[in-house]
Image 1: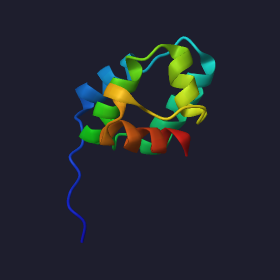
Image 2: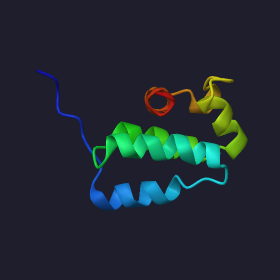
Image 3: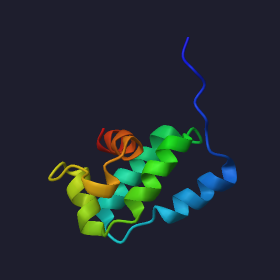
Image 4: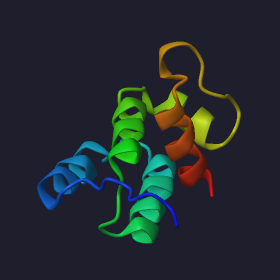
Length: 89
C-alpha cells in the first residue's frame, strides 16, 4: 500500500493554472497536456515544482521541457525534477 499523496485544493489549483499561462505556445502545450492528464489530482509537491518553473523565462523553461538543459542551481530540487519528468512525458 502506498502513502496518501497530499493534493492541492480547488482554489489553489485554479490559481496554479492561471500562474502557468505562458507566452510561448510550445510551453503552453506541455503544461496543458500535464493538466489534462492530472485533472484535479495535482499534488502539493507537483504544485511546488510548477511554481518554481513558472518563475523562469519562457525560453529557459522550453529548454528544460525539451531536455536541452537540466535543472541546476536553486531550481535543482526534487519537486522540480518530479514535475519536470511529468511535463516531459
